[in-house]
Image (cartoon, rainbow over all chains, first blue to last red):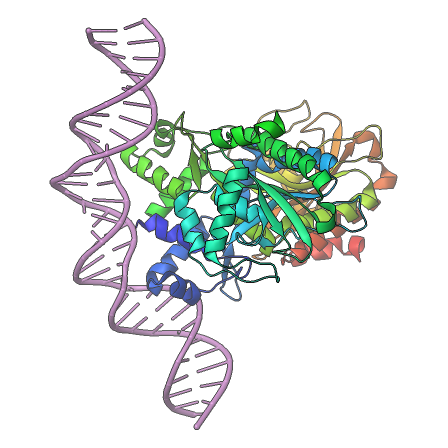
Length: 263
Length: 263
DNA sequence: TCCTGATGGTTCAAATAGTGGACCTTGTGG
DNA sequence: CCACAAGGTCCACTATTTGAACCATCAGGA
């Protein structure tokens, strides 16, 4: 493994659950010795990828990342396109909608969302939440269309039970993935939050890989046989649009599957 | 210079003006040989910091950056805090307001903004624009409070004349910086866009350095002697608030200067 | 008071990982 | 059909990275 790899890997240890780490913690996590870890951290800090708290000496993610992400966003406006597509989708489904993208191996991070404002009983998005792969419609469908190697790595983990409906058995989850691959949609019925129903469709980037999902979430009661086809069609259309805005393409199979929905 | 440095430096060559570069272009820009450059690019691609277009073979900034920036934003919600403070500021000045942060050596990138919706004659923010240091209120005040080394590096450049009012003489710009340091405010009178007046105040991060500026922009005619003090006070208050939300502190001198405005 | 075991940080000989000139392949324009 | 520039690869040589041992500081305990 190259030095650069080892150095960049350090950034990955900083998560929302542990946004600041000290030298010793990095050393333990990486399994390398303290001296090398320290030099790597110093290099990242010099480059602006990390910032060091002058008092506690702890390291956190730095401004250079924001800057580069901003540049990326300006050149290839993923979030802006997402927002545009979400607005159209929201007009059609009148339920909370969101676009989330893969965040390492933890789950999905929300890139953009619109909260429902038309119903009394609505679903809120907590934008800081990381959506777990196994318990959300977005997670399931993303995994279903992800690279096999990545999928296997995730499926090899232990899954938390978040509600009484959460599926934690890898074998059953694999069936759900199979189902998502067949239909093009991920579904979750209260697996993440009780009583919340959600449908998600995959999004693909320029390199053809699945980058995340677009989804809508609503109280279970409002997902009826009457509304189902309308909602699925709207979500599929949105996923197809956003994928092409992102410069990607739907896999041929998926396009064929959705043919009857997006004409 | 370490390998990691050389590798990370490659990311810096991707800007909004050249969002995609090929191997040869990177090689020329870095001055290194092709083989090393190629290996570095490959490593960055593997780590997700770059993406390679499968057809053109060109490299662009990758999804890992968005992911890490998202994590940073969730842990230390710079943009969210910015938006909150902007809303308060907008209520007070009822003009277009924005927060922009240093983007390498090119200028400032806009992190959040609210466009005026109360006047017929209003100023629009183009969020993709990079605000040059020499021609905007935000740029001037950021430079004024930046590290001397950084300031000198920027001042050593050639400046473009964007409007008939743009100042391009480094000596005169140095005086403007002096002025901004004294008052705590940067000003621009049509130097970026004709007829647009703007006032900006500096923002400081946890490490005590100036990260960017908060500003309001309006048609020249609406910045009058009557409105001036109200606007300055609101901007100063907003800068002070946002700085402390960001975990930073105003330099003691500046705090004293603004004392009469923010009590 | 003086241990003990954390923390962050530094040193330098040994060894590993990075370097870059030369080379291959493909595609475009003349 | 050639020349040139593009992306990419090879491998002997060498410079950078490595990590055990080191120091300084701090907090708690006997």
